[in-house]
Image 1 (cartoon, rainbow, N blue to C red):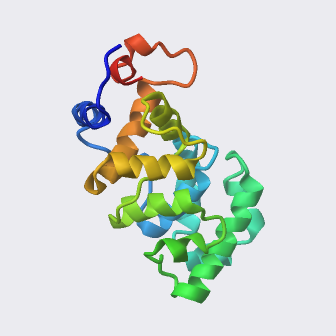
Image 2 (image 1 turned 30 degrees about the vertical axis):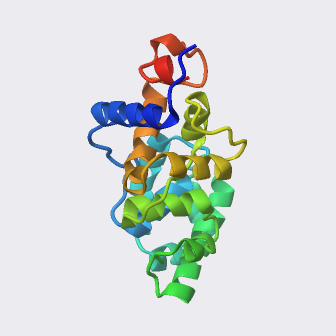
Length: 208
């Protein structure tokens, strides 16, 4: 059996990801940090494609916290009804907008603690906003990243907290933002959860 040093494996994975995805467009349509936060909140347990289908209507009516707070929860729910967990997400969006107005003068805060204190905003959502909207180093872990980090032997974590900690140790801090998006894209296009053939995978073939 060939033993590959973990640092060599990480370097090879990074090089291949950079070759496949030299650009990493943000998959959620948005207009500014606030609408990006809304889109990320809506994306939980739902595809980005579905989120992008409903946000144009939502943002035309409520592209600011003040406009969102002025809507009734039922109005928000009707607009996002095709998205999973729509009733809960509608309540959270309305309350989050009110909290932004009350606590932050309608401006998205730029700390993890303040973001995670908002209704419906967990650590992963806060991390996505911090790194993609504000450029603050973070390594959000979703189901794709959790699956691939385990497959590639980069983490034995049983939860996203452990996987995030391990990946932050493996990759340099200035790479976290792009690796997050690259691994998501790779998981969708090359490394599915089911029916995956490791020997045919550009990364699993040497990293699994």
